[in-house]
Image: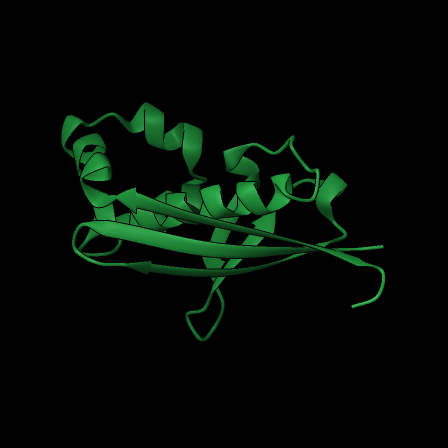
Amino acid sequence: MKGSIFGIGADIENVDRFEKFISSGNNSVLNRIFTQSEIEYCFSKSKIAQYLAARYAGKEAVVKALTSIGKTKVDYREIEITNNGNGVPMARINNEEYSNLQIYLTLSHSSDKAIAFAIAIEKH
């Protein structure tokens, strides 16, 4: 698209890292990374660690996509990953500075790994 800048990011995470957070009861780490609605969503699932790992991989992929277009000042909690009505993951950045960005995201997980890809498009 003319007048647009594209960035891409990817990340893969080990699910067991998030299983350790859950089993230790270390909610302070989760609260630094995830919004309350993300935590509630993940904890509503039977495989909590897989969903947390996928959402974290999504945040990492978004950060990498943003960094590739020169946007380096975003906090993990400003990136909120939700699902649309069809269950498709979406990333929203809760910061006015990034209102001209469109983020496309895909997440996937298996029993031991979670992966994400993100594309950020900045429109001028």
